Image (cartoon, rainbow over all chains, first blue to last red; front, side, top):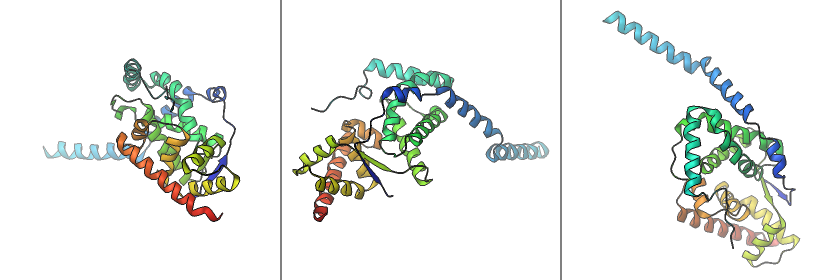
Length: 61
Length: 193
């Protein structure tokens, strides 16, 4: 990987970094990600496989 | 004398407090807020030290905390600050950003750090030697560069370095020494610059 060397870069003040803190936005993204899982192939694949397995169990016994 | 990183070196009381926050956050992510406030600047500085663009560093920092929250249930408290785990996530997120070309791997160095290396190498601090050092740093492999950055740029204790790169303290010390030797060798090789 090619690297760039930066010499004597200006140090970002703590106040500026603190201003960028946004925990609410991270919580929102977390909720969005949890919601997306319901629509994922992984979720429906698991649900589908379980349903088929259950169907066979019920019909066999 | 090497200064003590107060954010890393926790008292038992601080570690217990952190553990309590983690247990609460596992039940409800909103209780992760004090840990976010505590480590946000530290993680941002770690990321920005290795990146060119400030906004990309802020984005990666947010991703680190998002990933930490997603995986918090898997986190096991082992008596060390949460920071070590966050650094490992940060490293993985940065590598992803570099692979996706969303950010460029950067080595940030200042005149004090250049002077420190010149002292270690017993060389004069001048523009030619500075260029030789920059070239040598660029030639190190990813792990050796990481070790040099953690120890000589960020002034971290070997114990902390060990926790970040997942090795024992002594092993971190040996690996860092070897990385410095490689840097010196590469620096001497570039003597014709």
